[in-house]
Image (cartoon, rainbow, N blue to C red; front, side, top):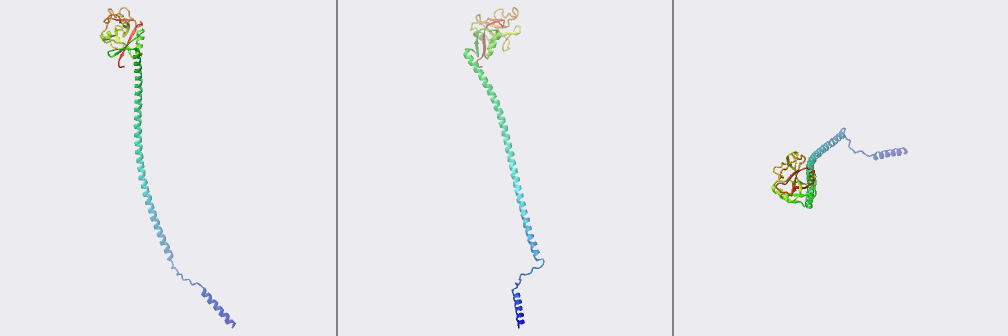
Length: 252
């Protein structure tokens, strides 16, 4: 009786154990089936990657082309600007040079105007006499012929040159002995005015000039304003002291 009960318990426990086991209902995969799926997935990923890389290359190429075009445009623009700047610089340089030349000319004109102003002011102060187209200055003191000429040159003038009878008549109104701008120092007997021209007609006193025969040192001409204006020139030693008359153009 006891053995039967034990056997029954053993069977009951086996049945309970077999009933408690979980039944695996997952279908078994066939050989090679899982590898085929993996390879297909990898192929799709490769194609996607290749397409992405191709698209990326196209984008890079397009970007490179855009940058190339932009760079060329910038380069051309810079070259054009550089050319404009160089042209402007050359123009400014030329204008600067022109202004420098104009400035030098203005300085020269300014100096000339100042000189003429000083001379005109001196002319007004010294009471020059006007006759025809010339102004005449009659000295108060006496000096040698050379000193007299230097005084005239300092005044922007020179010793008087008598060109005609009217001028001779005018200077003889100053009744004194005075030097005129006539000498034969260069060639004895050949009388020249201080401007280098030959004397063609003179108003010599009778027997004058006689420096070539009597006194070889009489190389300068004077006028005796007291005598007859038609014949009052005389040759004299240049070292003698005489008054002097300066002459210059009225528009100087």
